[in-house]
Image (tube, rainbow, N blue to C red; front, side, top):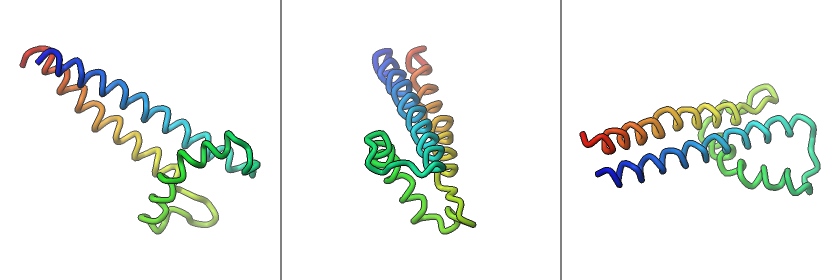
Length: 103
């Protein structure tokens, strides 16, 4: 069970890192949207390709994601990412620790 624990621990670290990077990409996309960026810029295109599936899904599922000209979908996305980090990643890590300890 020690090997399974190590695999789960590695999975939790990778998932935590991916979620952390995704959170910062969402934050950067939200900040850049304030200055009306050039849509042909490769960085802006990358940010859009990565975040659009998440943000559009949130906008479609939650009717109040945009109110008064302000888009709340990045905030909701960040909260979901933080929840996943605390609930899923910490749960995987807790299981991994128990398996490594032989419980």
